[in-house]
Length: 134
Image (cartoon, rainbow, N blue to C red; front, side, top):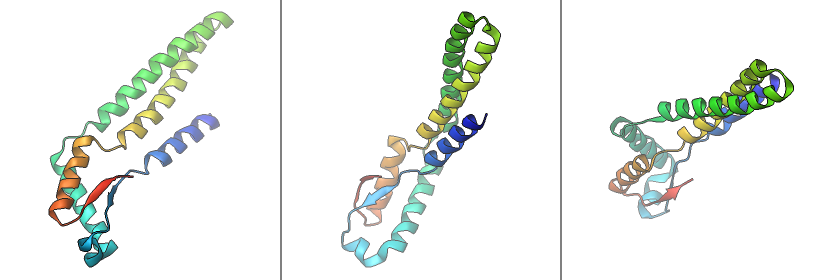
C-alpha cells in the first residue's frame, strides 16, 4: 500500500509540472520585462482554456480503465498459476488502475496542439515571439 501511495504521489508531482511557452528575447520582451510577459502568458492561457475544448478527464478515465483491464489480465494469469485466481485478479486490477491513473494524469497535463497554437497566436498578437514549449 505504501508503494502504491508513493507511486501515485510522484505521478501527481510530475504531472503538475505543466509545460509553458518559451519566448524569444525580442525587443518587445525586453521592453515589457519578464513579469509582464508572465502575466501575458497567463492571460493567453486563460483565453485558450475558455475557447479550446478539453478532453483531459476522458484521457485520465480511459488510461485508468485500460490499466485496470491489463492489470487484471496479468494478475489473473499469475493467480491462476498460484491457485489464487480471485486475489490475483483484484491485485492486478488495482495495480494496473494505479499505473493507468498516473500515466493518464501525466498525459492529460500535456497541452493539446490546438491549445498550444492558440496560446502562441495570442502571444504573437501581443508582440512576443514564442519559440516552442518547455
